[in-house]
Amino acid sequence: MYSKILVAYNGTPESRHALQECIRLTPGANTQVHLLVVMTPTPIVLAGEFVAAVPTIDEEQAEREAMSQVLEAGRRLLAEAGLNVTPHLEVGEPVTVIADLVNKFGIDLVIVGHSRKKPFALRWWRGSMDAVLVDKVRCSVLVAAEPKGG
Image 1 (tube, rainbow, N blue to C red):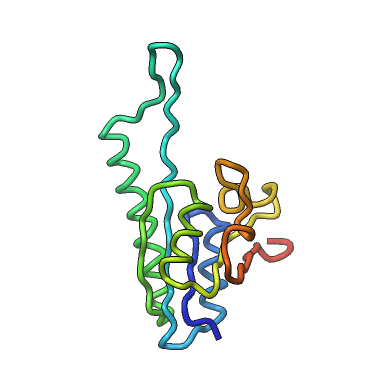
Image 2 (cartoon, rainbow, N blue to C red):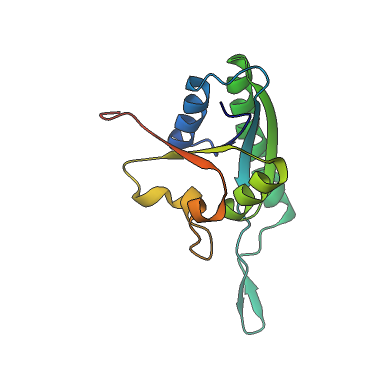
């Protein structure tokens, strides 16, 4: 039985499969479920003396608020299933953030969603340096996919 589970969630249908998989595991009352939403920072493009694609404070705040709502919706779904949930809203590259939380909290299992329609679960599996999640974490990884025909 896993005692500390990290569920990666971003509000997409495939990440919702990760929430459902966590619920299906029916972890015990003492299991800690960490629900993670990662905001990926907007890349800053430098071209000579010019800077492009710098988000405004209002845009960053709007994204933070939107992702906070996504996190709360996921937390509520897991809590309604009777799970002990600790929400986390982090900024960074998803693979790096997941690996950091695995180490920080001693996570036993990471659950990520995967769509059969998208190549290789791009958001969760690959970081900016093409690092593979399973090589970065020292715990089990459960890939929750949509059911066949779904």
